[in-house]
Image (cartoon, rainbow, N blue to C red):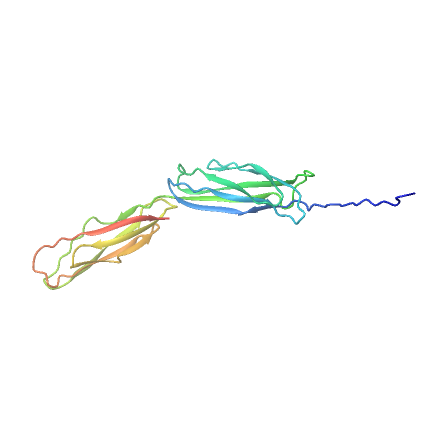
Length: 220
């Protein structure tokens, strides 16, 4: 027959099975009581080899202090960013943990995607505010003229409840005959000893008064 034979081009595209990829696999945050964790994000994408099929994915969680910006989507390889929002202002001090579950399916077949499901562990440590504790309100010492007095001491510690923000403190004095050491330190609850030394050399007889000032700040 005329025009015989004829050819018909045939192409078969075999898409790789969608693969669920998620990053990061854990979110960890540490805040002070009353604080708010800044929003973070998860990336979800089809991580299979080319040519890519379509990955459908869904996200779920059941945490009262966390919400997601999206509960699902699809990807042919592009990375989708999912906002993770926190509501921590009213949480008591403690450690809070939970899981964001990410599941994926092949859009063409409905079958479970490779690597599905993924679990993203989320944790928030809420630390109590540091509190400054000082063991004495006053110190008294006596000495002979031109002789030093015996040294004394007091304790400084963090009075906050565990888990607690670290207390960073500074110790100063306002008299040349008075020295408090060490001049600074930190405490997560342990009691630190501050040694107070007196030097009466060059002082005439009489009563001398000074102030030791202890200042503390929170450190997360």
